[in-house]
Image (cartoon, rainbow, N blue to C red; front, top):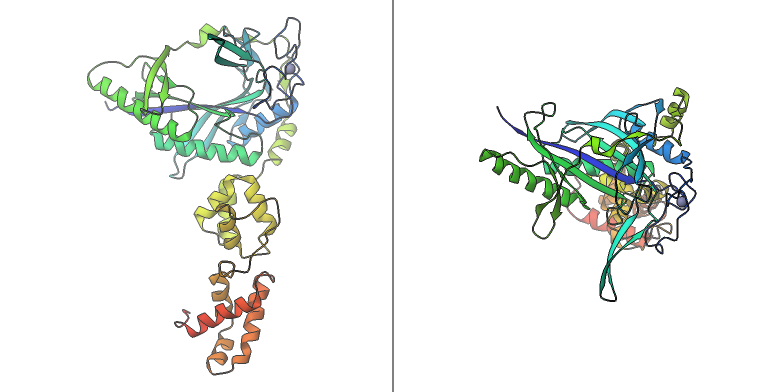
Length: 427
Ligand SMILES: [Zn+2]
C-alpha cells in the first residue's frame, strides 16, 4: 500500500486585545520592561481569580466563523497541567473537550479543502531569557506575556507538501489580519507555527508516529522544515525503519530539523475543568450577531478589486494583505486611476499617512487613461487627424476629467500628441 505525506498544522495567534485573557494587565507586551505588566492573576498567585475577557472570546468565535466552523453554544475552559518555569500557576487555562468552535475548512487555490479541527482560546505563557550576567549563565523569566489571549487553530492532517502548508498559512494570516484580531507578526511571536508530519496511508488512517516541528517563525522555514522532514522520514521508511514520535527543531542555516524531545501524550497533562470559570453559554442570536460583524473575506475582496477596479490579480492580492493599504486604496481610488494608485501603494511609493499628492510626471499620466480618452472619442480623433487641431483642448479636458484634475494639462496634451502622432490606435 502506498504511503502519502500527511501534514497537520497547529497555529497559535496572539490576540491584540487591550487587556490580557483573565486580568486587566495590558496585553501588548513586546519590548516592554520585564515584569512591568503583571498582577496576582497573571503571576498565578494563590487565591487570585481569573475573569475571562469577553472581547477575546468574541474574537476567538469570529475566527472560527471566518474558517467556516460550527460554534459550540456551551464551551468550557480547562486546566492543562505541566511544570515549566514560564508557567507560574503550574497549569495553563485552555479549552479541551468543548472548544469555542470546531469542524471548519479553508480552501486552497487548487480547490483542495483543508479541514479545520478546532479553534480554541487559551492563555499565553511567560518568556524565559537566557543571559550571561557577571560571567554567570542565568535564566530569567519575564511574565509580561503570561495571560495574553492566545487562539489555537488546529487542522486535520490534510496537507500534502511544504508548499501547500505555506499557502494555507498565508491565507490564514490574511484572514486573521482582515478580521483585525491579531498582527500575526511572526518576528514578534504573535503568530507561531507547528506542523506535524508523517507518512500515512491517508488522513484518516494515520501512521503510528508523527513528528512535530516547533518554533518555526516564518512561512519559508515552515515549508522548508516540512519538506526536509518528509525526505528524512521517507529515507527511514524505505530502509524499513519506523521514524520516532518526537518534537524536532528547525535549523535555518542547514535547512534541517534536529531532535529536541520525545513527545508527551495528552494524558500527561491531567486536563480537568477550570473550577474558577463557569461554562460559557451563548445564544444562537449572539453567535449570529458576531457573524454579521465579519468583514468580507480577503478572497472575496480580491475578486471585487479585480472586477470593480480592473486591478491585476497580483496587485489586488498584495493590497488585500495589508488592511491599512486596502483602506487607503478604498478611500482615494476615485482621485486617481485605480491601477496607478494601487501600484504606488504596493510599491511603497506613497505615504499612507497623507492623501495622495501626485507629482505631475509622466508616470502619473497613465497611458491607460490616454488610451481610454482616445477610444471614447474616436470622432474627435478623426477631426484632429483631418487637421482640426483645435479639438486638442477638448481631449485634454477629457483627460483632466478622468483624472479628477490630478494631471498637469500641459503634460496631458504632450502625451495626447505623442499618441496621436504615433502608431495608429488599436480599436
Ligand atoms: Zn495580570
